[in-house]
Length: 532
Image (cartoon, rainbow, N blue to C red; front, side):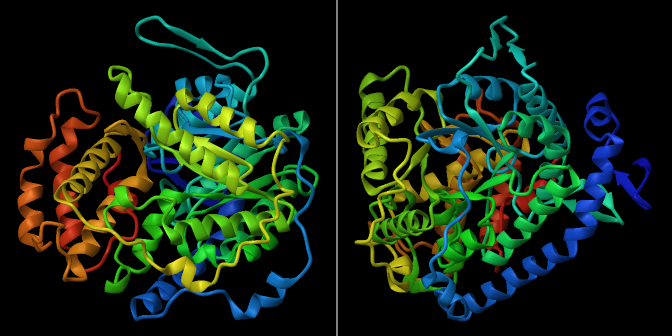
């Protein structure tokens, strides 16, 4: 264990081997700033996490999510968020991905309006990956980043036309175990955010480029208010004008869908929009109703944005954002171009077009893609149906969404193939994550933690609420699950797969999680204990 010199009268401990990257990232000013963030906000974070658990216990006992009575006046009041910077007025296509060097160069050059550099669901938070990611972003902001592959292919930033950078730190629930302050791990969110702004805020602000953020996994407006306090403190601490830092919040938990007005209001001087984080939202629906046998979803492939509860969520998000002068961002197209099968590729791209057409016609102000090959498709759809920079003028006054519309499950079935796919996708993703990859192509889809969460949460619920059957009548029980888990290696060709060396470990973990009496809150929590 390497000790970092005492900072702000606090002993900090670094539970990782010192390296050149450590020295460049964890400078004395950066450490002082992290200590201040931890000391000011950690108790509040822990209190909010406790409140999450208490609310979930009430859901498990039969309570249903609903709009808050105590904030009704806020929802009906006439107010708007602060003006949005010019650089963020047009966000018609955004690309997301991890913070490795090649991804950053390609994403900034991609032609997308925004690149969301992701320390969260598409990054496996190994210590080296986190530190190198911070260095990569600093180099990119300083316009001093390039990359050469082992084969000699060189990547460098274009002179102009670069995507605007936004950063997604980890969610409030994750710790950064490598840095202890007062013998406690610092929040992963504060570690990612704090290092980024300490090193880059002045440069970005001087250019009018931020800092800009995506804030994930919020479950209440109280959690949004905590972020607002962090942003406000950081602006003052770093000498920036109040309101310089801007954020987009992902509405990717079911409880947050009932507090969209409240979340916008909590961040109203700094928020620029909300995003339909559809995959995490489906996972959150399953987790929220994990003990409700009348709200079990069909297999993942049958739960689309055409499902009534998801359509209601997206429509309400658009209506709420536009009423308040904020942007309503669409969700992720996870497809990957299929190089060796023209027919399959065309079918996949048609799904992307249909999805983006739905979003543009509904009134979204932009959308997400996971692969540069989808940018042209998404852009062409939004160019045709959104000739201006955004659609804030589309008020969607036709939308009438009540509590039941947001929680009524979609109908469908569970096929044997769908059951096995959940097992195989989860095992493959977890193996790759444990091996340091957080974004993994599987079956021509870019899988990240959110989609793996759907797979394993569905398995747990199908097996624990009882009475579920495959569409051929076979009971879904542990005999079926254990037999399927035991034959994973028969279905997965490990040759050349990311994380192949950890497939057995991942298989065992999925077995443990699925047999456990309680649903594991996030798979990244037990997996993180095994990193490094």
